[in-house]
Length: 424
Image 1 (cartoon, rainbow, N blue to C red):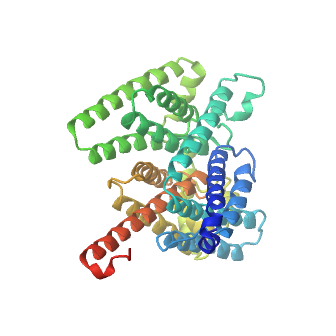
Image 2: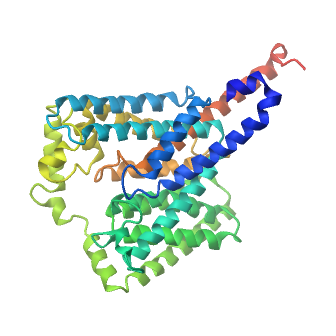
Image 3: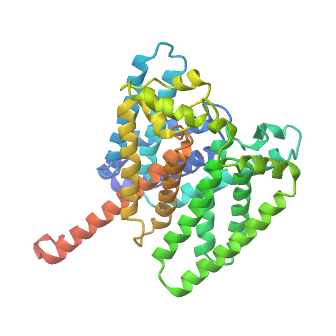
């Protein structure tokens, strides 16, 4: 599109603008579909595969600021491909690596479209909120058996919405919940009831997932959001507003959860899931024992064990992203994944408190990435679609900041040297 517009700017400008609007709409639809993954391949994969190909075909570029994300994710997946060479039974393994590679490309795609136009960030998060609220409502209705067949949206008496696993469903709801919380804390009081309603729906969805990782992520992310907002906004009036609204929100949440706990089914499952260490965690060959054995085995195998091999050996998956990166992607995958997490947190932190149009979205995505890195100690996140959206948002905002500062330096040089002034 860019080549065509340069060749015939007057003729093709309206068509180019129309294509960009349609393309942005497709991006929103893709993000919306990320909340509906009952079976694989899901509609999300089909939509994203199509539009990734079309966007890059029509001129979407990967800048120098986004290139490190691409390189790290490619190295990560090369590690996964190398792990296939040590497998005896490759059933399902090539597809696993193919999905990993696709998700890596989706992260680069999100980064590139954000850099291309920062206004798409609002579109991305609004679509995410819409998808999250709908899938949360499905999970809530399913949990309480609100209609015949509603149990399809639950698993082991836990809400899972339109997902396959409650442990993915719960964390998926956290970033859009943060977005709504931010809008309540910083927006107009007239719209607060709408945002609060959505936030309560997502909160109940997280609660009924009965995922300890999701609960921990939600609490951490909400507290971190308040802290970052207090650091950014230094006026006493704004800090008082945030503090007052936050305390009010906590009280409302406590009342809502207390209401849900009136159900014996809810309270019994909550008391059971609220235990820090479950029987399957500390038992012989439980989660923590598998972690120990898996790390010892991975130290002897530089290329890894291969996708899903550890799960077949012990009957359960790794449930630890660091161990997962070692067993499934080898030493190369482990090093690059650790580097990816740290690089993402560093580049995001550099611009976290800067007054930019994209700062709120960067703040939400950065906090969410940090939270997911923490819960990665007890769960695998390498195939969570929304994590790659977050990667793309952080790196896209980094690219926007890089371009902004570069433009500022050029403007300063031109102001200092009259010879660099553009011709009138």
